[in-house]
Length: 295
Image (tube, rainbow, N blue to C red; front, side, top):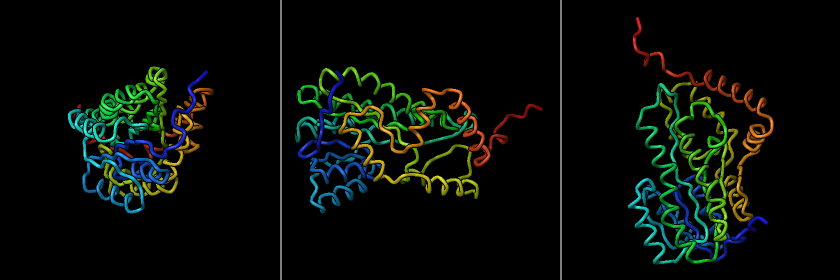
């Protein structure tokens, strides 16, 4: 028999959220506060994080910790975990939300792009898991680990090779921990958002693309119209996590794409080819200028 939901409600629960200063992280924190959680928040941006914490407190929410940290820096995460655990004890729910996005073709991506994505999107959650999960295990009361991957951790999204490397990696970690942590009554949820209209949409880096071009601005606006809000994504995350669902989707299109991938591979392959063709028409790379002169 599979593990029933170890955390069925958030009242009085210690909840850690990384990337809590904006977007999905902020939305899941605010919704957890509304449900009575004791929040422990972190983000790399100290001022924005403090503003979120102040807003939650002003509305009657409980924030035990709001402390800036770069999840890519293991020492910072270690100090954060020591502080939080000393002050509040073990967490009941840990949400790895913090992440960055850099897209591009193999020709346009630089080595530092690949490295930074792995450092933040994969090693960041691993650092959090290393430091916050052992106290949860020792506490013996179970809990829930929520890792936010991406649609790019499931399907072959155009220009996402480096980003997908980090998000598929987090998916692999989650798949193993899903079973390793079962004996400790700690459930694992893997969140695979599709389009979510967060601040990341405005700051995303696409190597080799003029992001002020008319075609790019038009494509971004089209994306934002189709994307769900951070609040809608957060509702889906909490709905899944409190039921101990492993796969958590924030929009039906990604659920459908994943279904095609698993149960109708020819349809999936056709859809991905069409997706890639369309993306390359809308967002032409400036690769030609980067090619060596073979004359």
